[in-house]
Length: 69
View (cartoon, one colour):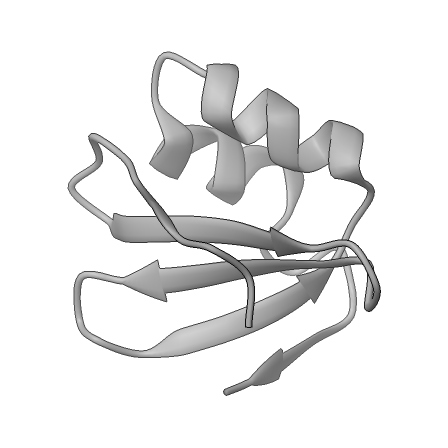
């Protein structure tokens, strides 16, 4: 699994990126984890966002293939 990075968010606890699978890994505060098929640029943008949770909602949730881990 990818190395996880804690983020300042009311929705997300930590994120990581699996380069081999091309997946963004998100550990939500509710303790559920999901993998989202996004580019590494989307991962970088989420990390750079003022609100990672808002970035996720606006740009990733419901828009890309994902799976529960």
